[in-house]
Image (cartoon, rainbow, N blue to C red; front, top):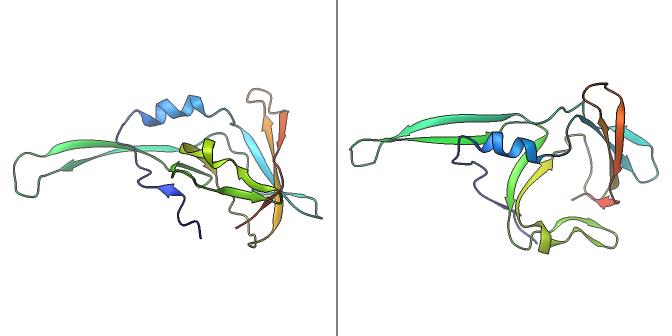
Length: 151
């Protein structure tokens, strides 16, 4: 058993975090398709223009009185994305040849696309992402993953 691969919390004590990570995400304005071995690709997402990020604040009063302090946080609030910090040695997916992503390079903060389309553990699948030009709406690039075994 590998246990949880994510380090908590996924909350960032920085009100500017959303504006910092937005330009770092290179894949925007896309649709995701999933193919189960032996079948055609099926669309598993709507057109995703980017991600939604929320910033908020809370006033924290010390337990034994005294003046409180304001704390400002940023959090990804999007059903299709998760921004998490991976634990050292985390295994991200498996292929028939081994691990999908080398644990030596997978640690640290990473943005994940979350596939909510129904699936079964043990399915062999691959994903296709079609990126669309923001101005024209025309497809501009296609990316296809390796075959993966769903957990």
